Image (cartoon, rainbow over all chains, first blue to last red):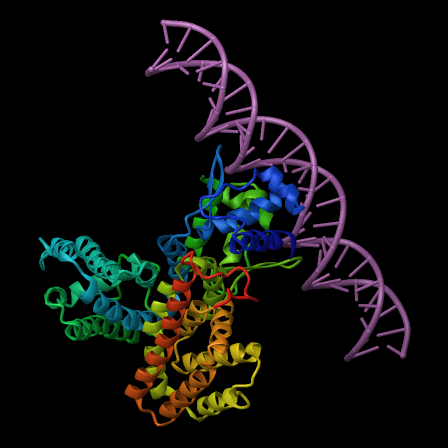
Amino acid sequence: MALTDDAIDKIKEMLLAGELRPGDRLPPEKDLADRLGLSRSSLREAVKALELIRVLDVRRGDGTYVTTLEPKLLNEALGFIVELHQARGVVELLEVRRMLEPAAAAQAAHRMGPDGFAALRASMAGITEETSVEELVEHDAEFHRIIAAQAGNSYLSSLLEALSSQTLRARIWRGLTEEQAVARTLAEHDAIARALEQRDTELVRALVTVHVSGVEAWLRRAMEESPTGDVDFSAPGQRPSR
Amino acid sequence: MALTDDAIDKIKEMLLAGELRPGDRLPPEKDLADRLGLSRSSLREAVKALELIRVLDVRRGDGTYVTTLEPKLLNEALGFIVELHQARGVVELLEVRRMLEPAAAAQAAHRMGPDGFAALRASMAGITEETSVEELVEHDAEFHRIIAAQAGNSYLSSLLEALSSQTLRARIWRGLTEEQAVARTLAEHDAIARALEQRDTELVRALVTVHVSGVEAWLRRAMEESPTGDVDFSAPGQRPSR
DNA sequence: TCCCCAGATTCATCCGATGTATTAGGATGT
DNA sequence: ACATCCTAATACATCGGATGAATCTGGGGA
């Protein structure tokens, strides 16, 4: 294949060369197609592909623009991809997360300000062992999101966000509630928050490592129980009985 | 926008639901377009987008297939995206790398076998201070690739590979040679290899941290020198005179 | 000055035709 | 029986034009 892919490359090169900058508007489909020497149909395929990975932003009736290319956008693109892979390599992905999350938290321990502490505490308010699974999942995501954000590295946040998608979180929490491990997990969150407030970097790193490893261990166990060696991800609403 | 994006979602859902499995062949464009209720043109845009992120593999004259969805493929998709971001957030991306690389190396210290040691030594053979920049770049990439591979986590390897693209490596080495820091860098490689052979996990972790941090520090300095606060990535063949 | 509307611009979607690569299977020759 | 070549069917690649819908722009009216 050539034409459409050439177009993708050319647009990419225009971006790398600075010929197109974030926020810039591309020429109309017709003009750009002529300039790149292909038909509108083919060009549209190229644009669509670049739109999926959040490089271009197409606004109907207006025009096509280069996105800001902010790290946050990488997240969406990445999330989409990772989600498709998660049904296969969950454990490996979690292994990566176990490397990043403690490092991110440790960094947050340095950089975190009063607003960060407040946000963290706020996310924990009202969450108890009786909270519904949906809310637990949301809280958990928010808790880790806040810490990652406080590490002050947007790419890091995006990566961590992508690495543990909502669907995976949901599955895990569902499993945890069945094992009555919610209390322990919430206690761990509390301990992490305290350590952050005391800026005890090493303790933060250790606590987060334990926390994430705990999830990883649970998942490994859950997968071994499943005869196919593969946890069922297609029906997040149910789990094989234990 | 709706139709084409709906198509992307539907295909994605078919994948997540297991309706489509890796290696499967999709119905012909015509049929699938009918089934999803849109025109061939629109469907093709969706397929093209999914092809860019290596989810689908289109073979002209044959058909469209679901890829293996192996981690390695995530790499290509990721590399493409990261490359576009690198002109902006180099430092942040390197920060992430500094978190992952030591952890990966430490894990490799456990899992590495004789073949790994051999490969590592082979990659270092014949590399001296006199080696050309191109070869140095290639050696450097290979050195880190081997270690990452020995960590036994494909997603991790892919991520690390994507995080420091060839163009970035090239720029850094070019800078290093001008600063006569090649010898030190090669010595660090040697030390890392030794520590791995002795399975001294903590030493490995420390050495790699120092190694990667050195690069990061150099890059920070180089960027401060540049008045725009941005290193020139558009012309990898030259650097602003120091 | 403010509001509303028509026209221009731009993307969205579809259709049908033509070109080209690949594959499968039959015809052929040994 | 087997290997080889050729052809037809299949499937993607690309094009150009037509129609529709969303958005923006600028002029006209209150």
